[in-house]
Image (tube, rainbow, N blue to C red):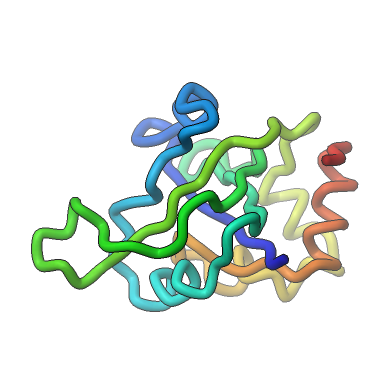
Length: 139
């Protein structure tokens, strides 16, 4: 199993929107960066991801899992980009802010910090476990 982080602007697609989709989940559409797209192509069913509110909140608020592998994104009329489908698993007990992440030396190599513009990034297992601990959350 691999771990990921999905960034979304809460005014566009919020954690509550994701929760409201229930078990059917939602396609992670609109990604137009090739590196982020390649990250989605590498995902497997059951991989876990943090749901991160970007822009104003800048915090990890929930956990999703991948329920459908990479497939073409219907919002891309040229047919060049794809998406995966993710389902909400659990809200973070305590959201973990970007400030907290940046203050933790063991997370200095986290892609969220190093490649802040990417909307979908990998998270290492040790990083995942540390963020789960910071968020007082378990699965």
